[in-house]
Image 1 (cartoon, one colour):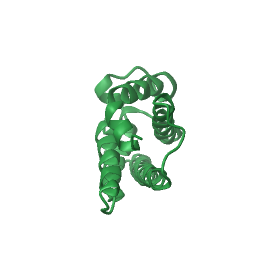
Image 2 (image 1 turned 60 degrees about the vertical axis):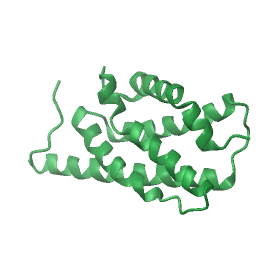
Image 3 (image 1 turned 135 degrees about the vertical axis):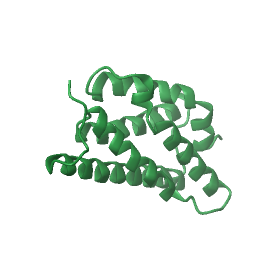
Image 4 (image 1 turned 45 degrees about the vertical axis):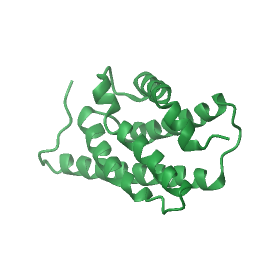
Length: 151
């Protein structure tokens, strides 16, 4: 049976395309370019896969490595005009896309440890994205230099 990391690697292009389409259609504040939408998500997915691989090899998964990517993603989303709930929901959409990929590959079950690692990675990234987005918003309200683009 394929592992979650195997499925995510083999289906990475389809997974990413599905997520991009969903974010543009449902969560983005307007029409954004693919690089603006993608931001740090490809790196995030690579780190999730790496964490899963480390666990498969009997090592610590090091899920903390996704935190800085979430931090940067929160800032980028603030700058391009996303609302905070949409930042959280786009991570949820990515999580759903991963589960859809698993279903399409004919797997109904994940190992508990794979599900834990996946959840830890998403929790860290979302927490850091929200924290930094909120910090940027507070700076804006205080009149600092961090201002999202105006339309």
